Length: 262
Image 1 (cartoon, rainbow, N blue to C red):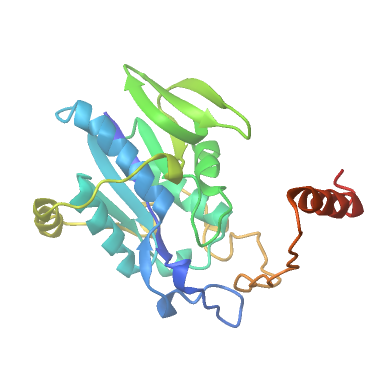
Image 2 (spheres, helix red, strand yellow):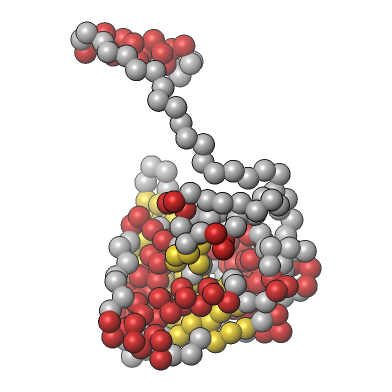
């Protein structure tokens, strides 16, 4: 069984974000990490491999600048068998559509049974790339997934909805987007780190992709950024000190009524 896990090198937004004049992220000015949801997706793949290590191989795939090979080294140190970096100047400036088209163009030239991505990336929060890849490949997708199991040619996962879960079973090849908060990734091991740096990372460029020119890079990106900014800090708000629980509850009810919530 061949599993491809899509991972992304993203800015560590915990310390704030910085933007270029054109509205795009200034990635060189921020620390880079593996996207948390993607790391959870890698953990899901590793758990599948743990159950059948002789017959399961995991390829970590990323698209980005040449320095993005660092997340592939991290993925291999955690247990992935190999890494594939897709990098080329013509791929720069890609939005979710162009990114998913590019990754799907690489997958068309690879063997895979299961493709795993994170639910979304912390630098965009769109949750679009995973399902778009599945659409490009014309394969089923299970999004917002956890508790993934494989049996024969089928994969089963618990899919989160707003107020419940559905158990969904799909025939492979299939794509799954994984919920980061539902899975705790394992740590790298010292032996895994040494092994990772003794392995070669495969690098693909434009010539290795089965995708049309009009669907890649900035040219193939229909999204136009009108404005970008960091999160705006919220004010302290109104502070009241009621004399009793009854007065407090009545105050809340009155405010909700004013806002037509109730």
